Length: 35
Image 1 (spheres, one colour):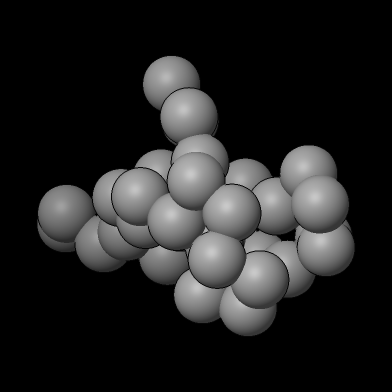
Image 2: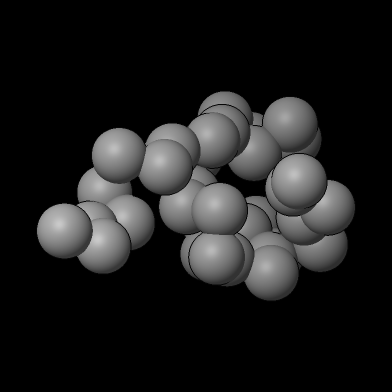
């Protein structure tokens, strides 16, 4: 329970997989505004 792995999004700039807790893309550094 509480596993973040199922909360996946993709960076709109580089399509890298990110989680909903990421504030910026780990690949390209774009700020993410995930809701």
